[in-house]
Structure formats: C-alpha cells, structure tokens
Length: 349
Ligand code: UDP
Ligand code: MG
View (cartoon, rainbow, N blue to C red):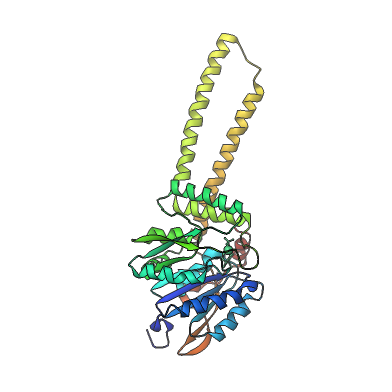
C-alpha cells in the first residue's frame, strides 16, 4: 500500500449510513451525529451511501463532506439498490476496526454509538441491539414480532430484535461479509452467521425525525423473503411435508370412495365439497410454486453474477486533499450494467 491510499490511516471506528431521499432529516442527523462521535474521543469516519436519492440528499452530503472532509466519506451509487445493498457498498469502503450501521432518519439515536463501542472493546465481535419501546406503527411492530418468531423457528440465528439496524461489527466479520457477494441479503442475519462472540444490548429508539418510511408493504415483504430464503431451506422441507400429508389424505379418500361405490353405488352428491377440497389443494400448489420461485429467482440473480451496485463517485480525502475519486475496481468489477439489468432491478426483479 502506498502513502496515497486512504487505508493507510485507518480510523478505529467506521459509521455506515445509507441515505435515500432523506433531505428533510439530514441537517438534524449531522447536528447530532458529529458531536456524539467527537465526544467519544476516538478516531472515526462516517461513510454515507447515497442510494440513488432523487432529492437534495446528494448535494447535502457533498456539503457535509466539504465541512468535515477529515471524517466524512460519501459514496454516490448510480441508482436505488436498496438499504442492504447500500450498506454493503459502505462496508467495502470501510476501514475501521469497529463498523457500526445506523439509519439516516434518526430512529437510531447517534448518542448510543458509545455504548456499542464499549461493548465491542470488551471483546465481542457482534453487538446486536434490542429497541426499548420501539417507535413504529402498530402493524409494523406486530408484523416484526411474527417475522422474528418465524425466523427463530426456521434458522439458527438467535436474535431478539432482527429489525434494528443500529449494530456493531468487528473488522473480521465485515471482511468476511465483503467476500460473500450476496445479492439479496439481510445484513444483521448475515453478520450473525460469521460472528464468533455475539452479544445483544438494549438501545433507545425514536420516531422518524422527518419524511416517510422508505419501505412500502411490497418492499417489506420482499425483504422478509430475503431473510427467509437467504438463511433457511426449512420452508422447502415444509412443502415436501405438506405434499406427503396431502397425498396420503387423498389416497385414503380414493379408497373410501371406491369401497362406497361398490356398496352404495355411484355418488353424485357432495360435488361442492369436492370442489372446496380441490380449490384448497390448488391454493397449496400455487403457494408452493410461488415459494419455489422465490428461491429460484434469487439463485438466478446470484448465478448471473452481475455487479451488485455501481459506484458513481466517492468523495473522500486523500493525502489531506478532498477528492472526488473514481471507485476502486473491486466495486465496479470492470463491468457496466446492461439496460435490461437496470430495468429488472427497478421492477424489483
Ligand atoms: N434506505 C436506503 N435505500 C432504500 C430504502 C431505505 O438507503 O431503498 C435507507 C433510508 O434512507 C434509511 C434506512 O435505509 O436511512 C432505513 O429506512 P427507513 O427508515 O425508511 O426504514 P424503516 O425505519 O421504516 O424500516
Ligand atoms: Mg426508519
């Protein structure tokens, strides 16, 4: 490594923050985040990833970079790749021994970062968090509870509150994640699978400072499918199990009807019951096909091995000079996306 490589002056702490259309809340975030980090008395860098925002967020991030070039780096992605991909882009650029993820909407108070760092210094390599008094809508809390229970049953991942993004990871865990190349993933779960000494602590949670949640019901469902399909094949085994039970049930019914045919003669009644049973089974089959499709679609995306995201520019300081650098080769992987790839991504394919 030569002297001009910013990696030679690695800070202890990297804070990774994905930003998507957050212009209304960014000023408040800066005004709380930087004092909280300065108060820690450690070297740090804040990595903002602009996930294809269409508002003033990129300009505001660039202004913040000019205000604090020593501790700020901004990665500008060329499109909207989703929160978890944006964080992965940040991980690739991060240099700290401790890497902390945070939402840009101030739902995760920056003042809690010190608590996570202290826990990491005790020797843990993954600090998970539990939101005390989560400030989200009732249906979101109920849905999360159900998903937490499901994940608990079908994976080996042990987490009380999988949804909180304010988490700390060790350099080793981040390096392993960087080697993965996952396309559809759920970062807290992925990191957990590589952690050797994880711990959980309680943190405060606040209401979104400004703007709306960036997740529609559709994208939330997709994210939860990423979690289920990315970390478990148990649903596929359940399908085989349901298939076996249904086959045995219909075999019994067939024998029953056959015997009945010879004793009582042909039956014509009960046609609608039969319809009901058939439609139920059709439903099961279509659900099974859909679930298979969720797995297969993800396998397809993974095997195509297209670039997961494209970095347009990185704003960072090199040799004490602020520069708008071209991305490192590893991120772009030397390829440009075809127009088809981009269309598919936007449709959530
Ligand atoms: N986000 C992103 N890309 C997206 C959606 C969200 O980078 O496509 C960021 C967003 O700016 C925020 C974080 O991910 O910093 C969490 O998003 P949000 O607060 O909308 O999610 P919620 O709190 O409702 O789960
Ligand atoms: Mg939020």
